[in-house]
Length: 75
Image (cartoon, rainbow, N blue to C red; front, side, top):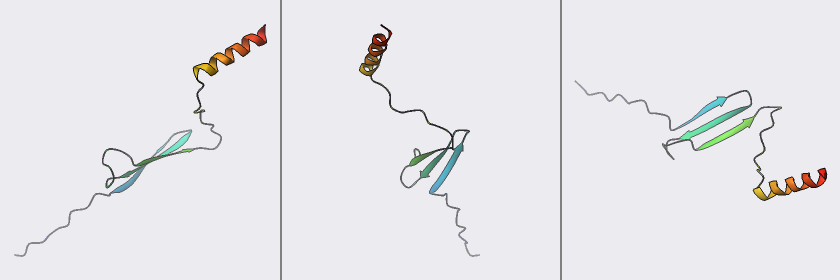
């Protein structure tokens, strides 16, 4: 009897996972040839009408200057 090699199905090396909520869509892209620990890249797509929070935060000095300006206006 001859021995027959059944090829095992290969796991995909690239795939995407899509997360969606009411404000945005996240697309996580994986590639097991590059890394096996996490996603290679993540895309954030905001839906129409949504304004993402500003990423610029004020420093402590800027906050103090703003408070001084408010006090001067009140006096």
